[in-house]
Image 1 (cartoon, rainbow, N blue to C red):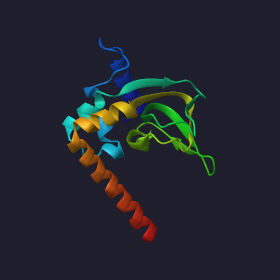
Image 2: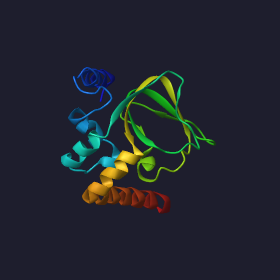
Image 3: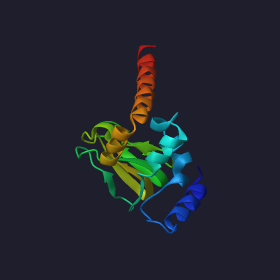
Length: 161
């Protein structure tokens, strides 16, 4: 999604007559492109979209801090962020990139800082509400397990091959 498209979609969502921090069906295409959610049905994507919130981060702000509890998952809608691990090189994230998928599942401490390079707009999904959805929708949990298993197998093949 281009920055102009993301900006137009975001402006539309923020000016809608409903709660400006909630998002909905407009975000199905965005969520469908997130690797963790690929292959999910539109019904499941709609349920996840209902949990999502819009969140802005000021330039230079720390979006998440290494060691803090993983309470949210983020998809960048606009802007650029840097993942700064305790060791190793920083990784740059842009529109459409996501981070914190493991936080949705286990809430474990963050492994790196993520810092906003300029203003950043995200779609954010909280751990507690996502876990509640998984308890209500076992088929969604099974679909996510299949996706995670496929990703793990791909990593194993790349390491051994």
